[in-house]
Image (tube, rainbow, N blue to C red; front, side, top):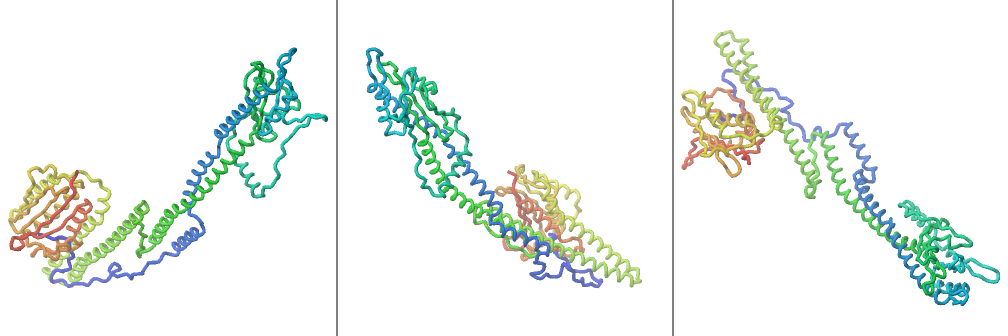
Length: 582
């Protein structure tokens, strides 16, 4: 069988060989040669490294930190807005005032009312004033009592004596807070002011001689109903809560008791809750910042190392090792593994290109050297017979160069073509049948026959691939088998299912393959031809191209010898295993 795969170095007899001169492709390069970056690339890399050192955090760290802190800040801001909680406290305070007012009004109705024969039930101002002062003394509530005519007759904050009425005010507590506390309170007040405003309430106005007509809740109370009202006090910024309860005796309304208080307790309660939330927010913020920095570090540092390695390898001819983070088991580990695999593939491709260029230069020199020797000799020879012989050698060398350049061109563009073309279903049985038909129609009388052996049901022998390239593989194998087969020999093609793949074999009855060359025959320019075949007929790229095509189809190709039971070689067998179309 023909092994169209290796390096041919023999020269035709009678032509002096010319030693090829060494070229740059043949010269070995030193291990560290061209390993340094160019001055411009070194300067660019140094600038990036300086910028990276000046930054406390990478931009990715800032983004992660900003996203996490922003989410926490929005959540914390939502907690700080306690509008519903404040409204519930106001409602509770109103109900508390109502309860107190009902108790106070009942006490006044029983203890401060005189049953007069002339006027009927009468509310006694002095007695009511004393009782009311004692009732509200334990509380921080202000009580005002209005008679049935709407005139005020008692006020818990007004003391009456011989010298007239004196209004009582609560003095603020002594200022014992430190400057830090004051600054913190100002910051707190500023933050609270930034929150959405609470419900707008009517303004509370204080009159020196108030009347029932000044307060709508008192008017309701004088009509026998319980009145409630919430107002805003512009002088203090607090709310003024008031409840008016009718003072009755036997269902008769004798006056109205108005209890009022500010929202200082409510404000303090909301403040306490907000400060507690702020403490929790501070702890959560600290934990979030630390975790964000840690998370960003576990992402940014490996990416910086990968980027730096990629930057170093960009301008070097010496290989730069990409950091291995595959042990992380995450996307950065996948990225590291992909970069390492990509770098390995690039270096393998570069090495293959360099070897291919060196092999091409070496192979082209052989016919060129022979051609040069023949031309130089033809000039000095005058014998016409020798000149015709030299011209035939020159023609053979030119044809050999043409075949070699054609095969080299095919091999060099094969990768790009295979990567661009889309795979389609290929019927292996039909393709082999067409190959057998063409071979049988064109073979000479003494050439080997091509026999196809397919299973009874061959409809499932379909693979994803490029039909023209797969046909090229089987044509190369059958052509090699035909060149090594004896006259009237037989070449057998078989195809069958092999698990989830299709196995195709090409068998001949030639001399077989040396056991130590079963792998080397797939190398570029390796050639081992049958005895008597004309030198230079094959370029040595056939099996190499076939292997490249099969591996691009995610398949395997290998060679083995056919042997008898006693171990005698009776031919060669080439096997191709391709994944079946599921």
